[in-house]
Length: 276
Image (cartoon, rainbow, N blue to C red):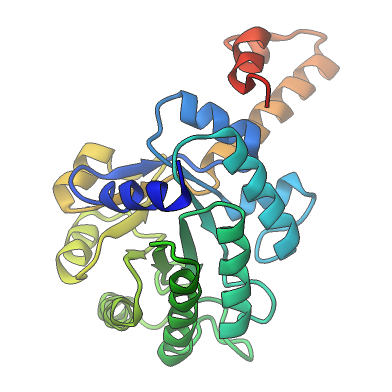
């Protein structure tokens, strides 16, 4: 399939029942996520950074991120969308354009682009700054002939910006400007209250993405609230690393292996990669 052949169905996946994206961090995790039944692959910037020995928050170099995306695209057949954080570099429109160009060249058909951090210690970029970045991303996609799905993330709730009772309106205002600039979806992490999620879904004129995990409403409940896309963020990577830590501590302290019970067979996993 061509890149555009994957871009079109990926866009359609945002209509109807929520698109559930269990986020992967390398080719191995992506192939396992695909084999488990995911309709698309999303990356976790945190997981990818940790896999390279970097901290999250643009600790990963763009070249490293692009290489990881290329490895993921090589082993899966489903669409891949990439968390490009704040666009790498200094986060200028030119930096965002370079990041989008790199992940498109690697085979991705979607990106997440967040409006944090801001300049000079501010938690968020101004609306106008992020609008310019979205337009830059769209221009690159247009030049490459790919119907890129731009999922813009606003961190009003995540960063605790402003007074709590003003955050809803701030998110809705930012979302409207971002969608007008060319964003296809809006990602609002750190919101788990069902009433707020439902109000956001009703007020934002684009597919709403939320981050789920323990303590969040179920996927069925999120569907009833109007959510179009559900991400797990770094949760899978954290769970995998947690298992590694538990297993190592057990074998070092007790000399036993109970934490490894339930692991898939070597051949089952090795066979997922064929001749890749």
